[in-house]
Structures are given as structure tokens and as C-alpha cells.
Length: 359
Image (cartoon, rainbow, N blue to C red):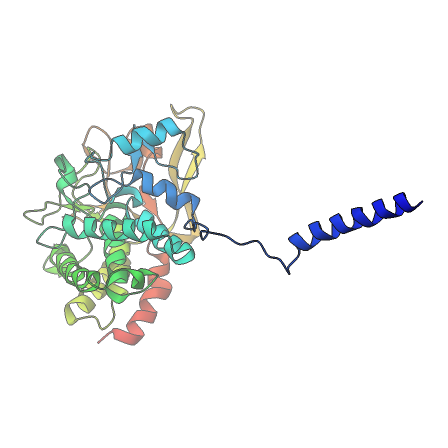
């Protein structure tokens, strides 16, 4: 009985010693501080992989649009980084501007310095790509063919200017970048606005809208792809006008440009029609694009003739047509020929702007 009692006391003593060693009264000590790994953003990390040495981003790899939500294999990651010297960086299809927008937000959320470094490299890319006349080519460095043109198409130059405007004003997260970028961005912004004013199309001595792209030397409306002829654009004009309306303390020239663009959009609107894509088994693509009567709808054509102000259309043959039905089915359904693009601008945005700034 005494032996059992002694063993019990011994066991209790050992347990108490073990408990005491692990209790708060006897904390474990570290000889080195833990390594702090910067927080990560999955999409931002992928964007770092795709960034080119030039500072910009491509819009596609092997003719496939970049999808940052898609997982990257190690082999893909290796090949993309291996091609980092490629001259395929662009401002087309939201490339570069979408990455900068996401990365600056990712930096705000994570404080990961790699994201900020990538943003500043991207800002430098945009500044370096600007022509002396204030415009931007679609691709740079080393653009080829129509990639040289000053590109308003699909909002390319407007998105670029909006990023630089945010950098210049220190807004939308860009207040985090080095202070040296703000004056550089402000200078580029001023040159860009000047380019916009110089490229506004004159018809019978009156300012109207803007073309999709311009010759970077003559600043005249220019042709891009076979079906993208010189024109006055119902879509691109809206984006340019909205950008000019976003400027604080607009100059008299900016006000004149906005008012003239809105007047032109009013003149060329097509009320009583809607643009629809429909199923049509008789067509090669099994689909078609048509205008249908709709008293509640108003549309604008993508292209207006520079001389007549009439809508026109063009297929891959490069020949101007007067009716959408006259071009091949593949192009009818493969391009945005009409849209309600100026509806909100005319109904809400311009009246609000005019109440504040119109002379």
C-alpha cells in the first residue's frame, strides 16, 4: 500500500512538472523572430507573371485572351516569364490599365511591395509610350502597321488618360505611389487633352465627334483593320466626351469640344429602333444582327461617313456599304455596328455637367 501511494505521488509530481513547463508561467522563448511573408492577392500575383520588361501587359498569349481567373501551371508560368522581353504590351482591350487598377487596390489591401513596384513600372510604361503630340499608339514599343495609330478605339486612350489623371490627382489608391509620378502624369494628361482637342473632326467648319484612330503624324482619321475605315464614331465619341467632362475647371476649348460633340450626337441619333442579335439557322453563323422597330429605343451607328454624316458599314473586303445587310454575316454578328451608347450621356451626364460648366 505504501509503494502504490509513493508511485502515485511520483506520477503526480511528473505530471505537474510537465504541466508547469508548458504553462504561461514558463513560456517558450524564440531565438529568432518569425519571418513575415507579405500578404498576397491571387490575381495580382498572376499579373506580376504577365508583366513585360517594358512595364506594360499583353492582351493575349498565343492568340488567347489572358484570363487571370484561370490557374497557371508551372510550365505556363515559366514560359510566360521567359517571354518577358516580348514587344506585345498594349493598351488595347483594357490591357495594362486593368492590371494597374487591380494592382494598386491589391497593394492597398496587402501592402505587398511587389504590387507597388509593378504599378510604378506600369505608370512609366504609359508615360514612355506617349507621342510628343499627346496621343498613344495601340501597342508599344515597336508598333507595326495600324498599331502606330493614335487609338481611341474601344476606349484605349481614354482609359490611359484616366489612369494618369488618378496618378496626377493622387486618387483611387495612386496616392501611394512615389510623389515623382504626379507631375509627370499631369504633364502627360495635359498633352493628351490637347491631342483630343486637335483631333476632333471638323465638318463644314463645325466640331463634331472623333474617329476610332488617327495617323500619329498628320492627326487625320485613319484606317485600321480592313473593316475599320476613317469615320466619325458614335461609340468612341461618347467615351471621349465623358472623359473631357470629368476634367475639373475645364478650359473654354474643352467646354466647346464637349458641347459640340453632344450637339453632333443629337443630330445623328436614330430614334425608334433597337439593335438586336437574333438566332437565324439560315445564316453561316446561325445568328444575325438586325435593327428592329422600337419606339422606346434610340441607337447610334458605330461609323458615320465623314462627308455625308450617314451611317455606313464595312466587311473584310474593305468596301464601304450603306446597309448592314450588305456585309457578310460573319462581320455583321462579329462587330458592334449600333448601340445605345449616347443615351445616358444626353439624358443625364451632359445636363448635369452643363448646369455646372456650360457658358
